[in-house]
Length: 362
Image (cartoon, rainbow, N blue to C red; front, side, top):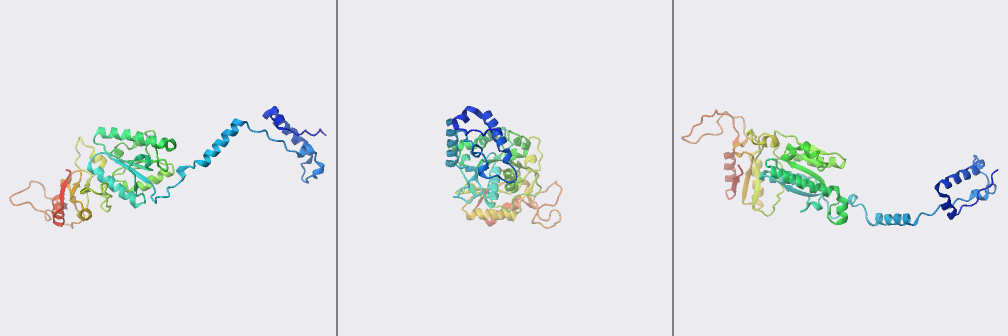
């Protein structure tokens, strides 16, 4: 039988190195092999050297200091992306920017109303504090698109360098922000926007704003959210917009969406879809709420308000029965079925709210 191994000191372990320690462990196991049967031997039968465990070599001082510093950092700095804000019940802070026409401003108010209903009711004034960033875009003017790309680069920086920005005080959000592009540019350049260096998480067209909460949840599971389907019916008539300017005496009210005039120079029919008119009753209800809130002037919005035609509240009538020309005028146009026109809408609004001033954008 081989002689038992001598106890191993720390200095000897350092001299042996890792390869020497492995060889010594093999010898130690070989010395213990006769006692590895099912019935364990008595302690007195095992050599004293085999009963002693080798003392592990101490870690180098530099490695020890590094491990101690990292442990202290882990204790003093919790992962803030896993900690919710106890001061608010909102699902996420929202920051929004809008480019383009008055219709986009009204659309953003509709988006904020939809998000508020789903629990996203906190709006912050700067993107550095937001967990959700909405940028409502315009596809009519090139300078507006260039401005959007510049802003997306900055938002991407906030998202990509989120932890570094938190440490340096440049960001105050509780988690990396989700970036959502809305509006006409999202409809026109949807594939390019999603493929642009992974800057954007959600792309949503003008007719898909009701789907925004679901698209944002898709991002939580590691997917991109996109819905750019155009609708033949969506007018958001049942949604009361959240007014961006609470103390303003003027407000925007959308009366129709889309356009049927396929002008060669205009992209609106391809980004906003076909014409749809809101019911007169829903418009009158929204104007009444604005009047109670102190609004004195309302701008009626549409791509072409002269094409307003509400057929939702008009029964089947013979052609020309629900409208007539003024005395002394005639028309060469073919008489066709028509609903309530823009003039009928103005008549009703002026009768119900005589002290309210109305204007239109087209």
